Length: 121
Image: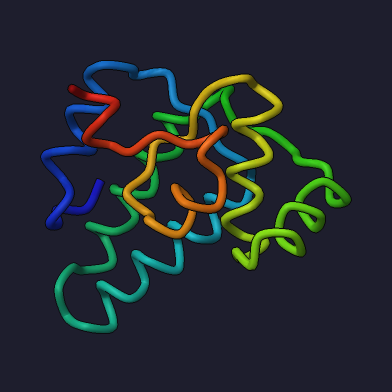
């Protein structure tokens, strides 16, 4: 949604599999990220509102609640954030890989993750 160093990979992942899923938390994380772009003067309010709307459309019908006990267990046993573990738990529940460039998650959860590079290869 927002151009960056990994945009080309994210677009390749989306082209290969356009049916993304996420825990409800993604909305707060996305709003926080977009608000930083406004604070830094990189984007205007109308632009980030459009980006958020587009992201919401992309995930419409594919947002899920996650089990708190499972998320907290993943976090406690891995040292990863509970935020990240929401995504890990959802991937496990849906039996799909979490496609990421986060090296810590790739290392901590190799059974639930795949790198963006490997996914599009």
